[in-house]
Amino acid sequence: MSKKNQFSQTLVLLGLFLLVTTTACTGNSTAPAPAPSEAETSETPQPTETSTETPQSEEVGLTLTDEGLQVMNLQTGSTTPLAFDTDMATTLDVVTRVLGEPEETGENSECPSGPLTIARWSNGLALNAADDTFVGWAMQSGDDDTTLTTVSGIGIGSTREELEKTYTVEVMDSSLGVEFSAGNLFGLLSSPEPTGTITDLWAGVACNFR
Image (tube, rainbow, N blue to C red; front, side):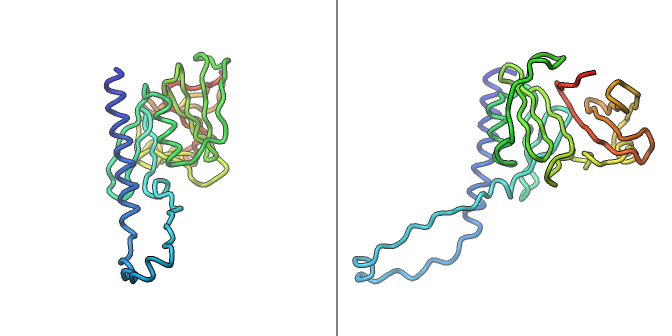
């Protein structure tokens, strides 16, 4: 992706968050209080209100795609892609606005695909970067309930039967376990049975040791 396209995409993403923040801040406004008298104005300093709300975490969500992530405005339903090959700094900024700061960020120089910088969140999401570029994501069971899914609702805990209702799936035994591919989505199942559940899900460049 050219720098010009990345810059345009960054403006779109930042514009989305500015719109959400403005909407959230103005939507809860109350009727103005009566104007103070001249004596009150001169004698009593008026306190300045400070908002402690974080509307972006309530109004914006993320979904997983085989081409990256998707930012969704939960009020309007509008979406903006956060595709692979996006600058990693932009990706981290957007995801942090939604999920909060990552639990850890570090480099794994032993990944089979080459050195990757990996940022992990408590919900099991990991973002992979190579040369400061967002190149992949992985999803596992996390410590909280904010598990991410695809637009069709497929995520950690979905069954093979549910997966096959949405995607054309190929299942195989590999050194990783019961592995599947669904287009450009990949993952692991707890068993090959229809009731087997997804334990791992990833797309793009992953750090899997086979």
